[in-house]
Length: 423
Image: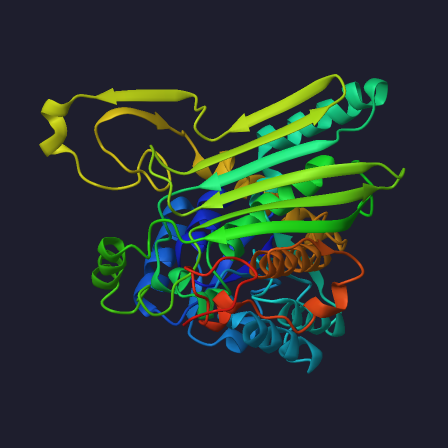
């Protein structure tokens, strides 16, 4: 019998999961929950058009969890609602009003470490299987490359020692992503969760989830573009006053370095860079893995097709993102992805979660992975604020109640790291 899956949320990421569901077998999307009735109906219509389910629409998370057609839930709603919505779902299960086998949650697991620990506690108290939805870990190119290098090259030459990843585009689609108090920060929170986890997995020996132990984190954040008066005004107008970077800015650039100790006592390094201030063809994700006698490279802009549209057709082109996520142009030389949900890893990720939940086992990516990522993100924010390296586990306790200045709405992008704020 097919697994019935309910989706909480009806925005950008929820749509990617629906598109990826075309490659999923043994599961149907049976319910959608959203505060926005219009986007919920649009998403339900897409589900039906693609033939991946016939969902009922709910406005209440607990009501969705009680639907007998729902066996598992994908949480794809804003970060500020994580604890509330996971609590509502887990509460229905604990009280015996819902019969669910698993819960999957989009990245990041929560806005800070305190919230992330509460989310883990709630699902474990309800005895639910749990999956952390980090799509880049499941990107087929990276999965296959990692498999080949670890099985062939690393066995002879030794394990990899350096991973690099970057994710860059021109900025989010929705107002809440720009709001650091709702989202939990800026681009570091929004996108470094990807780069931190994908580099950690590339450097980890397959089948050994505890292979790496974080030892040190250093980071830098900055607002390079969106606090400039012209662009702050542009955001203010685009979101009808809901996003005001003159008063409550978030970082649009972040970089971090994480040093790990491997299970065999070696030092390995991961480098991550993220940006909302990138101007180019569209979303640019790139990864590298380096070892003693080998390397791996992957980029979303190295596409299977490239198109050229001349300037004389410029007036006939309609603005959109039909070639590539965060597409910035409709003329010129442009990359095109045939199936973004597949290339970015959503299809493989959803299929893996469905197979794990259907067989009663924990997925390869669980909430505990999301918890590790959240700790590393908080360490990165603390490093960026203080201008020094954060050492783990020595300073781990300091991160438990830590909320970054950006997330508090008190960050001053003009102050150098470690200096006193003037705002």
